Length: 380
Image (tube, rainbow, N blue to C red):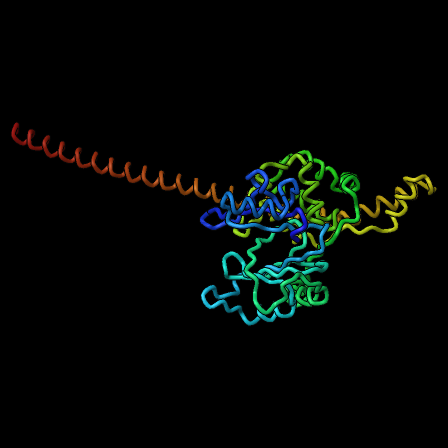
């Protein structure tokens, strides 16, 4: 790890009343990002910045180009006694690789070599990462465990299967690597049944959505389908879209995650079906190279396939938009009820005022009548 130029520094900042580990570019002192390699540096550079400028620590960024996997175990260690929870102790012993205490001293970071299985990558206080994320590195190694990073593929798969992959229904969403280039993703997305919607979002339009963030999520769900849930490719593509803004790289969460990272993560979790190449794609490749015949039949198969695949995604997006519409209608109904109540209260006040005025008028007339009777009595 020390030989790779994948290091950042970090500083603790308070955001919304919670401590957040904000990544720092050790070359410039500006903001760093786990998805922007221009803000990373070598280990020595990061260490020098930490010692010279007083950041709170250094961190390592996991990428597709390395073989490292990080296991983050939170809220499982007593900082006073140093004792781990029994279940976490079992996990650490089973992984049997380099393990250190986290900066908060309430958790552990385990780093090993392997391939992160597809499926969920977080559940409860256990999170597993192999790309687009950085780990704080303290060097506070846990005694009795290997001082080196070990290869632990079978153990990683066992931990992932037992503790992370299954949700309450026994199924977890897929997450894998894309089979399409960026250009192919854009081409297929635009030719799909919901291609018009994709084009609107891609161009930066938020029409039909209650907020910019909801439009971001809608585009990311589309990208998740076509990229097979590859968050790195999704990030690269989203940055080219008209929806991209500076907020994408802002740290919004206590674990150092940016708004963009968490949006991509949620989009993958909410996507239940992903694009898979079929014979249609083989035909398409042959057709493009001029080695096939029967373009009419090829177009028919291609359109049928795209319509079938995108019907699923179209239904989910329509459901999300229906939910948004229902929410907006509920808000309008509440506002109408509030206005109605205001009018009723105003009417009640007016009636009380009118009744009070009438009562006072009646009293005045009664007094005048008494005075007139007295005057007439005296004249008589």
